[in-house]
Length: 134
Image 1: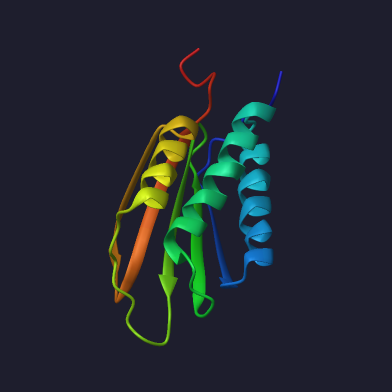
Image 2: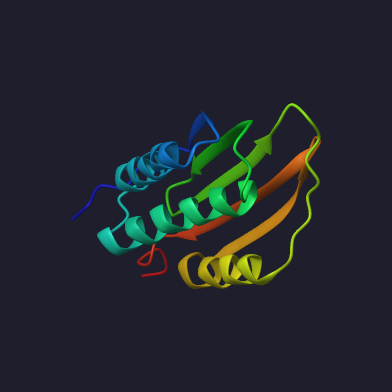
């Protein structure tokens, strides 16, 4: 039986907007989920969802920083992500690529949403452990 951590744990990460550094966001998600006792499939779903969340925020931009906050409450992990650039970035959504991102997130996580934080776009997702209701 996997030991479940019940205390709320929060991890913050800030990375430059570079495609090859998104792997750090995925690694942090996997680590938080593993420590919370999530199964392999749930961890992989969370890793993919975090990558999609990051990429949907930055699009084709190549400057600024991505800030991520991971919160583990034992049965669910919530990841908040916001994009910060030197110049204000409009928080516009839409288009074919955006529709695909939303469908991917719908398939991988239990809940997700978008908004603005400061002058830039933000998004969040929540992944519950598959056996949380068992």
